[in-house]
Length: 566
Image (cartoon, rainbow, N blue to C red; front, side, top):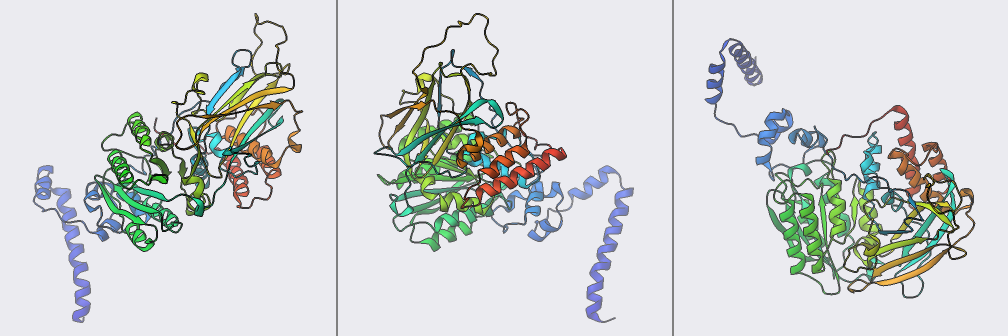
């Protein structure tokens, strides 16, 4: 045998012999002796190769944290093994909002709510379905599914920042009721027309982001936005894990190479001091505030805060207090299994921003490239919608979605009550299911109710009021208009936009149990969506149809939603 061969064989033989001796010793030794022997062995540094090769949970649980910032991003399976607790026990968090109740017009003629242009729920639902699983019911917010899609609504007239239109059709899932659509379309602006932007990228680099769906996805997303920056824009980069730091001070958008390099060098590991990260980001944004410009923080995280202030109400109040400085907060959700969607959605609301969930780079491109002006530029703030139904025409109604956006009637005219923002080019859809006067509704008639015919304005179904503020103004402006009592169209004769929005609304209700959709099933929702697909320039409606077909298959096969932390 050559010396070279001997060198190859000897370590193998020695390793085998040592392993056999240790096994025999373990079998015969008493517990105290084993503990003594173990305590006499000095701790050995763990290497990257060792971490990849040996994935025992206990080993990685104890030793992965000190490696934060030293290891290159690992493959998803390794990162998951290195961070047990982020994937082994699903603990996603969602807010539980019950369906809006049915109201009798004779008792509650006025419906008031804040508009919503967030779309995160749709992308999150898509993530579950593409993963072969039905989403948790609380992850499905009907208005965010409906508002995910572009619609061909009329543009604004005069000096109003948005246009308003309505349409009435027979409800697809209930021929006894009518579906009323209220459509809002904001004026669009190109990125070149936007004022200078002072942006702060606030990136979660804690251990829970050390996975394929976490930091690597964040880095790809932010670099898409970097490509859209203009020389007059400025970007800062702030990170947080166990501690916070300014990785990149305010840098002009023309220095794209420097910004990309700062994003590329990020690594993940450690605990999650989200509150201190938010504080530092607001400090950075205020330090470089552009008067009359766009001043916005883009928070990229899974929302799994565990150091510092982490309770829901305190973090919301922090964002609400900071919005008074003129800096808004947009949240971009990433990650799986430990995702805190409840916090992400509500933080954006409190911070006068919008919320999106990024499940792939196509979604990142939609939010930060195709719809960048909508994401960054606000054309109307504190937008509230109020509908007063005419009791001579409508006996009952229910608002579809917007369960966490309800306002008191008196909040409508109170300019101190916060509401939603509309970005440039945004469309907003609100759907009401209404029962015509004299028709069969959901409520049993009252024994002692007056049988007298209620008085009402002839020819009016309802009176629509919209309040909004021009950005920078303290007082709201009011738009008012009647909704005429037009004959409800059969759904087949309604516009493609109404048909498609109705299909998405039916789908969302079906995912939540179908309390009001009766025998109208997923197959019928799919057929309705196909009839309203239209031109589908971006392929989004076709994708929805595919997702609905996946949901139908999963529902038939008995798939159960993911477990959610309560």
